[in-house]
Image (cartoon, rainbow, N blue to C red; front, side):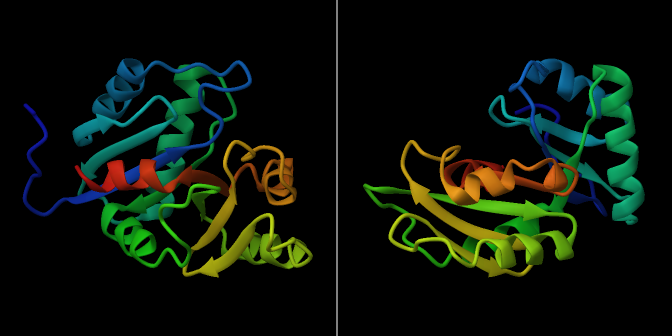
Length: 185
């Protein structure tokens, strides 16, 4: 693919936007890609229409980088934008550590990414009474591993917990297949 060659000294990042193309917040992939290119990032690529952007940068301050991207999203698209920002290498390690079955006819595998470790801990603490026969949740390094019944990713107790406004600015979930697509780049 033209323009996707990684420049020397840059690190491949993944920006995971929360709440894109749901609840009336619509952002076309081409417009999202254009914004990241305008921000000066290299090898920009969007994956699926759920707010996943791969890009290269040599910027090393992750907090400043996240803030800059969130501000640009707010300004361009007019919504309260929040992202979880990871290096592709970090995401790969998280996916490799997925503790449940990757392919299951009854359950669906998810990773819940977080930019605030305390929020991830709080979610695990509040989900302590989850029925393991229905869904499972396990803490990982910078991530929660979640498995829920197929077709019920918005209806289970963990799903309802993750949907709370309190976690909006620091967490977002992706199914394992999406994560694997983000790692294939």
